[in-house]
Structure formats: structure tokens, C-alpha cells
Length: 259
Image 1 (cartoon, helix red, strand yellow):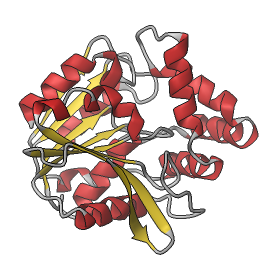
Image 2 (cartoon, rainbow, N blue to C red):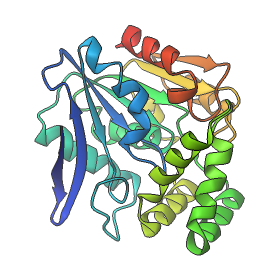
Image 3 (cartoon, one colour):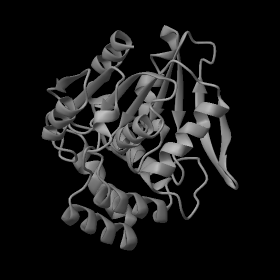
Image 4 (cartoon, helix red, strand yellow):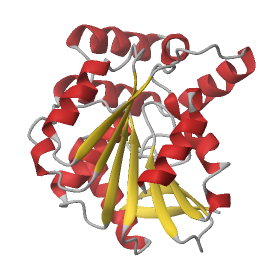
């Protein structure tokens, strides 16, 4: 079931909550500029195996409200905290992809991982996000021709072949976001770093990263592995930035084993 959760006055976030009676809860935080729908190929499988799966659309993205402000790691982590409180979640696994991984890292450091038993980072945009050159180029495109920017993201995202129909689906998901929030997150990925957050993470952490990732280089996953204690890194040999789809069976299997 899907519903809205207030996170501050006038701002409600959309939450997809599947199999509420599940024995173990997994909270998914999507990447930029997507929505919880990117985890369709996890939601198809894991709830049927007894997991409660919660997908959150960040502010500005998917079906959530799209305020003009609040696009910092602190505020995005605060939004997650508000949802955890509202849903009274405890002992859950937190899964973040790309920028969602960065938000998950900030949640862990800012709130001492409140309620989280295990952390999973999939091609996380951490410790750094975009280089200045990449960010400024994306920003210019976003503010002048956002569909063309989104087409470029779609074309470089996956290592494996995607059909035209899949490409269209993915492209439309990115356009559900507001232009201003899409641009604000590019600036965030350019200007904020997460090096100081990493040593504060003390929960068991699984790092999944596609070795062919053109968005966030694999070297960053190795850096996360070094800086997060009690972490393990699993390289995905046949994935770019999207192992959640490219090697979905392996991702789902690893999640169930780890969680």
C-alpha cells in the first residue's frame, strides 16, 4: 500500500509499504533522479519471501511533495528519521542506492543508525558524488533541457543491454522529479563530502558495486570498504550503476543472506 507521511509542515513524502506483516523490514532509499520504483525487481521477490519492503520517495522526487528547499544530506536524513518515527520502525535493514546510499550514510552518522540493524550500500555516491566538471555539465543540461540530461543518464547507467521499452520506463521515472530538486541534488553531489561520516558507522555493512559503473567509479566502493568497519564489499562483474536490475537475482539473494 502507498501513503503519504508528513516530514515537516507542508511537506509529505510518499511511502510504498509492501507486506506490512512481514517478519523482517527492509527500507529502500532510491538514487538520483529516480524514485522507489527503481526497486521493482526487489519488490517483486522479497515480500513474497516474507520481508516487509518499504520504498521512500525523497522530497522532490517520485510521488512525494516537491518543496523548493531542503536538499541537503542533513535534511534528507531527517526526512528518513521522521518516517522511521512515524512508522515506528525498529531492527530494520537500510538499503541505499547511489545518492540514496549517501543519504543512508548521513542517517547512520547523524542518528547513530537509529533502528538500523544492517546497512546495504549499492553503488553509493560516497565518499564523494560528482566531480565539479560532471556536476556543472549536468546542471547546465538540467536547467536547459532536462529530458536530454535524463536521456544521457539512462544511456550511461547500465552495463548490460536494455530494451527501448525499459529505457523509456527508466527515463520517465527520472522526469517525475521536479526540475529544481533535480538541480539541487546535483549541487549537493558536487559540494558535500561524506568522509567524516564513515568512521561513525558501526552496523554490519554490505557494499555492492558494479565494476563497470560509469557514474560512481568502483574505486569509491573500495574506499568505503576501508573506512567503514565491519563492512564487506561484493564486486558485481556484469553491472554498471544498476545492479538492482542488471544482476537482480544476485542482489536479491545477497540481501536475503545478509539480512
